Figure 1 (cartoon, rainbow, N blue to C red):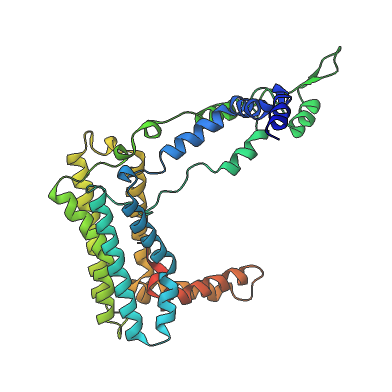
Figure 2 (figure 1 turned 180 degrees about the vertical axis):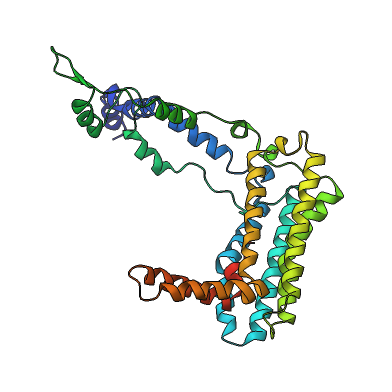
Length: 330
């Protein structure tokens, strides 16, 4: 049997045995730009995970799981009363704060990202959509039809038509998408500067502990939603943390804000936009935003299509009014 197997194996044509390898080589050659983009995205997936720390991944997964289920936990606890609800809220915020402090320690005091696990920058499914895009050689059916009606030219001998040239702006935009930036080739640890000063570390700790302090303050004043003390305490801590962090970066990073990486600039921008959510929390919501929302939704009632929009806003308004985690940003 072994001899027959070897004879049959030797009779297999070389073209068949090398076919998968040749197909792979052709695919890489034809999709070189797409492959390079995916490789650069995979290199940046780890961002700040030093040595692919398994502990970092476990803590980050726990933190992300809590963020996904915190509102559901609050809803379940609310059925057992307000005291149980606020205890659950505070416990969840404390556990998340401990996770963030541990992540900061594991990353050697690098600033934390709002998303503990970085997301993939390139979706492989999007590459399929780009196959029909203009690459200087191929044209889609729509381009051929539009070309035949516009500036296309039919060759007399072959009968083939040459497509119109694309807009120069489209060419520039297409090429810019293929260019690697400095952040694409940096080592993961270089994408976030270490916080080496006391001022910067205090700013990060304040940012991490702010939700815990705000939740405790809200629990103590739960009988009076319009009191300003919890709201002022929470927003003051968050604004102070951001100002300290910006001041520290301007002094610590070479070149100031210009020396920040794209990831750091994106995180600073996200934290700045998150300040807007304070309009949906606590006393500010009860005294101003809630009245404004009710006034707008009242004017939309009875109007075609707008009535449906008003109904959706009212549904969200119920969540904003009744549940703490509906406006949580951390």
